[in-house]
Image: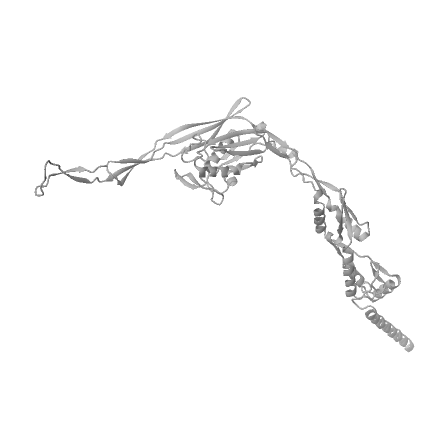
Amino acid sequence: MRRAVWVGAGIFFLLLLATAQLTYYDKTGCPAGTIPAGVYIDGHYVGGKTAGEVAAWLNRREKDLLARTVKVECASREWRVPLAELGVKLDRSVLEEALAVGHRGWLGQRLWERWRVGREGLHLPLKFSVDRQRLVSTLQDLTRELTVPPQNAAFRVLPDDTITIIPSREGKCADVEVAYPQLLAILNEGREPVIKLPLKPIPPAHTTEDVKNMGLDCLLAQFTTKFDPSNANRVYNISVAATAFNGLLVAPGEVVSFNRVVGPRSTKAGYKEAPTIIEDRFVDTVGGGVCQVSTTLYNAVLLAGLKVVERYAHSLPVGYVPLGRDATVSYGGFDFKFQNNTNKYLYLRTLVGPDFLTVKIYGNHNFKRRVEIRTWVTEEIPFKVVRKEDPDLEKGKEIVKQKGQKGYRVSAERIVWEGGKARREVLPSSYYKPVDEIVVVGTKAVPRLVVPERSEGKVSDENPPASTEVPASS
């Protein structure tokens, strides 16, 4: 019994001693931060080297490798490009993998792996990473001369108001995206250092079919108003506002707001001072004349058979359209809105001539109708005569300071002819306020002058002549 105890103790002691020796060997035979014997990186022996030594070797190796070039081929053209310019970098994870050999798992696993690697060897390949964005950017710049941009389809309005379609055209460019897997294969699988780029088509954003589907093929309606070319500021404002609508495309169902398209009428936006109706009288304000643009557009919209969403009349009649056919606007206030109530696009063009403004609306021939606009006065409102005394005007005199103007209530309708039948549509009515006639009446007293009587012969100082009062001359 005692002998068995001693044998067991001896065995335990021997195991303890062996473990201590193995642990000592584990710590001293291959300390942390050192690569064990038998490890190779890219054929280069790194066993027994420290992490710092191998990192320095990897840096030198990377510099040498990235100076090498690959051939890029595309459309019978070829270029030699250094790997460094293609966003290639050496993957440093190979160093971590080498350092992990014989340093993972429990003691027996670590020792077994070191013995096996020392006997059989372990060959680790170099690995590379590629910055895909830089690769694509570099190749795009390299092959830019091969790029043919696509041509979008468009339409052109000819002088006779017919519309022709300009066909779209496909473009082409190098398909640089395919370079990424090819480059990785060259670096990590040792393939031939050639990147082959095919040409790929670039579709246009707007095809011929897209433009055809817009349905623009005829002039639906146009309207022209005249203006005084001598009022330069007003003509300028008309031109600025009209330009905002020139080339405007209106999608089916879209509602167009005059104020949203034209924007604020300010000096910053380029507008000048010209006469505007404010509080029932004409005063100079920035943007005067813009209402002639909204009025011309309103009449073109009516004649095109489009839906009027919002419209307001001026408070006073304007001279460039008949009563009931004007449309006033003010930014932040009155607006003119219309809707494209067809199932095809509309296209607007404006033309400002020496003394006229024209608005043209193009659309699809299926929506072209014969349209008539009728307006009539339902009530004439007489103006009042207001007499105001003026103490600076001589008594007995009167001056018409403001000429009176009748007011009107006006109704309007649109007659649309379809299939030989007339369809009548009530349009917004208009109310124009009467303008008082203001007469200034003089109240200033007339002074009287004393004029001496004339007599024959000499008049003595002792006998002054009689006097007569006469009114002063006017």
